[in-house]
Image (cartoon, rainbow, N blue to C red; front, top):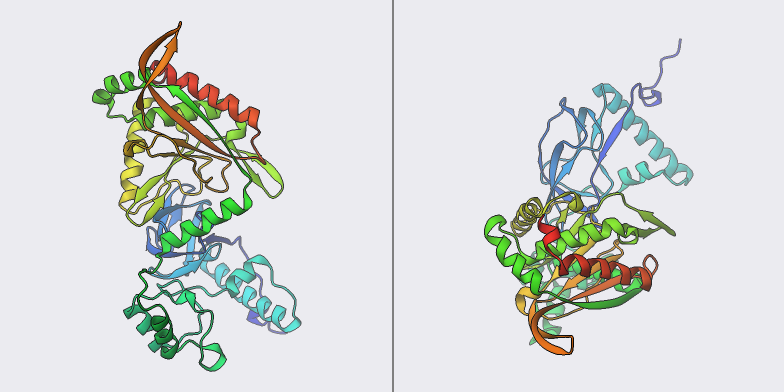
Amino acid sequence: MAQKNKSDEKPAGKIIPVLMPQAGQTMEDGTVISWKIKEGDKIEVGQIIFEIETDKANIEVEAVDSGRVAKIIAKEGQTVKVKTPVAYIADEDVDVEAYLVAESSQSKTNLQTNEPANETQQMQQTEKAVDKSGDSGRNISPAARKLAEQKGMDISVLSSGSGPGGRIITKDIEKVEASTSGRKGQPINKMRRAIAQNLTYSKQNIPHFYIKLTIEAQKLFDVYQQSKQKIKCTVNDFVILACAKAIRQHSAFRSQYKNNEIIESANVNIGIAVGLEDGLTVPVIVDADRMDLKTLSNRSRQIIENARNGKLEGIGQGIFTITNLGMFGVEEFNAIINPPESAILAVGTIREGIKVENGLIKPTRLMTLSLSLDHRVVDGVSAAKFLQTLKELLEEPEQLVN
């Protein structure tokens, strides 16, 4: 009987790859900071199994499948492309080894026959790691890279150099420095680059339209003043809770346009824009509509603090974002939609104003709410009805406390 070649053997058991998640539309890779499990451990769905660093924050990654961790292939400190395997789940180690051998053999066959590899094979053929500068695969000499780092230069401005095969050499770095002499500037960090990519994509691909409404906010201000001593809430917490309740009533605001379809989410997960020294990030409160004001306030405070410390929660799960510049005295502004969401609410400050009641002018407080909307998902009438619901909730804020 002929002996089988090892590469011809087929995996005996079920193999489940654990992938580097794509936490955000512009995320291209992530760096494994630490593993919370080891080979041989049993894991459950929802268990935190490793932590990664992205261009915006550190994220704890939960398991999406249960089973036994047979092999970890991405080491701590390694940067891996999104949707690329970092580990494998299987009952037996030998099954994973056989699987990897079979995949490697198939990849070679595809290359020899010029046939396209399937998605998994393509991911395995993709370079697994990039250097800390985020410029993996750039044709640049080590000396030129070191010189660029010393001068704080972003080498992405150079598409090619004057060396063999377009290699970037020290002379090219010196030329760029000479041409920009006298200009003031600084390299763009990874967070700012991600913000630029994400919001440019949004404005170029999402048909924005805007509506705004100014509400009477005297009761909101008074109830907030009464409540903040008891539950340490903010005005923004009232707005978040009111939005959560309104979104539950208006399904278009928990829907997204994807692949020529409108996909409705069952969950009301609200992102909160948090300004950082290096840019902006959006942690998410999951199932905000199921919380009372005290629970939501505690959760909001926690995720904002974590975001400022570099740990982003709920990334990629948001269906609606709230951005508030009221604390800076800004009365109103328009925001750019955070894709793939369909709307973002811009909240202005609570300011002193007047109202006319029965022909009499009375002092009061006002607040302006501005909605930016994806016209592929939300129409003007739907947007107006949503704002009307939001107005009713915020002008009678006692219902948000009780």
